[in-house]
Amino acid sequence: MLKITPLGGTREIGLNMMVIEYGDTAFAIDAGLMFPEDYMLGVDIVLPDISYIKENRKRFAAIVLTHAHEDHIGAIPFLARDVNVPIFGTPFTMELVKQKT
Image 1 (cartoon, rainbow, N blue to C red):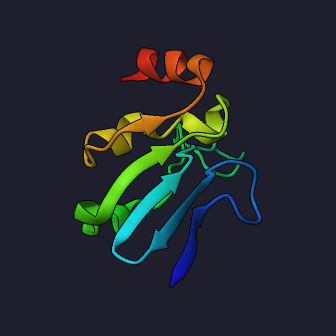
Image 2 (tube, helix red, strand yellow; image 1 turned 180 degrees about the horizontal axis):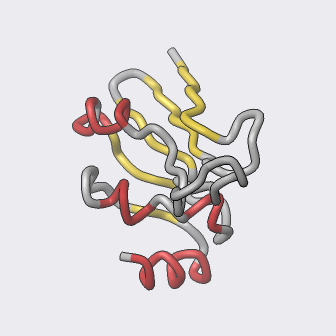
């Protein structure tokens, strides 16, 4: 059975992150952040809720990045320290990710 769960990026600009699950295997598409809104005083960045990924880290096979915008790759440093899986993207995207990790 295929299961798709958005962890961020719906009804907002930023936080793009989705989990795709098939059987016992899962992977994330994108890991973006969002820059704070005016009312979020004292907040530097907003991250998607990755608790589901952390709780199920043994089932995760990879992170797939669609492109190199911050709202799609900005949360990689925070996710990569908790989930050790391969990250896939275009050479340009991966070069920017390398600068973050």
